[in-house]
Length: 297
Image 1 (cartoon, helix red, strand yellow):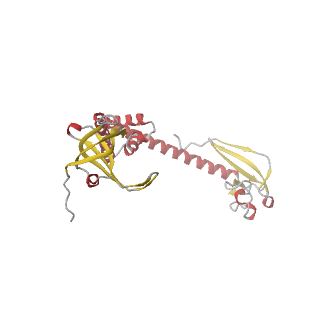
Image 2: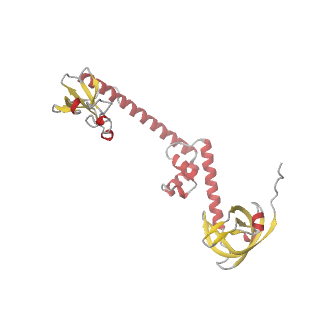
Image 3: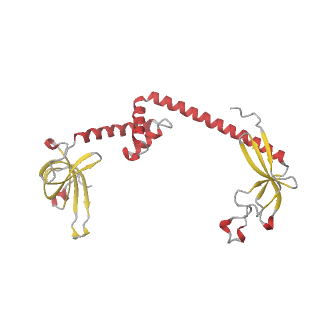
């Protein structure tokens, strides 16, 4: 791109007209100065001075401020123009040539930066082919749907389409991909425990404990309860059970405890593609082993 060439300039002159508010009117004619592909509308006064149109008002009036001094524009004082080039049209043409060249230099710099970034991205993808392939597949699979994968992985995948990832970002993305694969493999091995209505017994490790406060429901007061998520172990491996109970054993449960829970299958649910069996009715809890906790200091 040649940034030193002189652009072609043309001038189109309009008819003399009156511009500005009644109390500030002046006679001028519009001049359209075209420099290359850049256009600028100016106004020429009777004295040969070139004015620039005011970009803050409409013919000297700001209609949204009609309650303040009749809406007069304080930027141009109601004249609808601002003094731009007191030395005439030749000064305006020189300024526009300078601006045109500055635009060309800016465009050239942006193009060079874009080319360098593209080359850097190609080099990064060649150095990390497996990760780049995984991230490209995520972009193609999600199709601007961030809920399809982990939010951080979604951002990194789309960022990798524009610029190379840093070493830390690449390591983090790889870890998230490995976690997604491990979760998908785990979800494929999970199953429901019995059919709805059956009473089942599941032994597993407590992975989630959440306290639910009591309150008032449509049928009167509700007692406080503990929500547990238990992942089956041994013969029950692959079974995930959820239960809400007010039993003392449920309140005493901690993450990592191994428990045997017996209850009726109330619902077959799915969370994060993992089948979960919700138990209801009167459930019984037997603690098989407690997780070791460090004494408070």
